[in-house]
Length: 56
Image 1: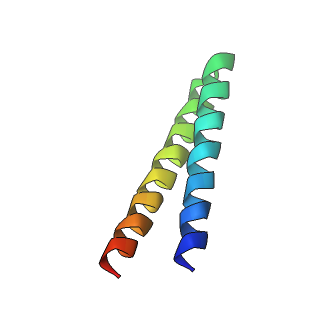
Image 2: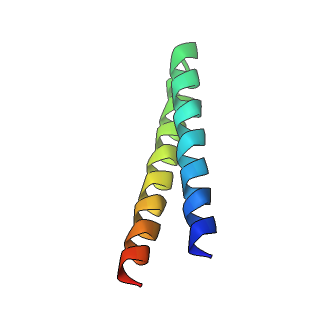
Image 3: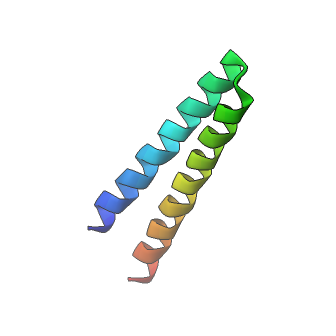
C-alpha cells in the first residue's frame, strides 16, 4: 500500500506544479498560489512515505 500512497503523492506534486506554472503564465496569482500549495502538500506526503519506507 505504501507504493500507491507514494504514487498518489507524486501525482499531486506534478499536478500542483502544472497548475502553478500555467496559472502564473496567465497572470492568475491566486490560482498559482493554490497550485504551489498543492505541489508542496504532494512533496510533503511523498517525503513522508519515503521516510516510512526507510524505517519499516
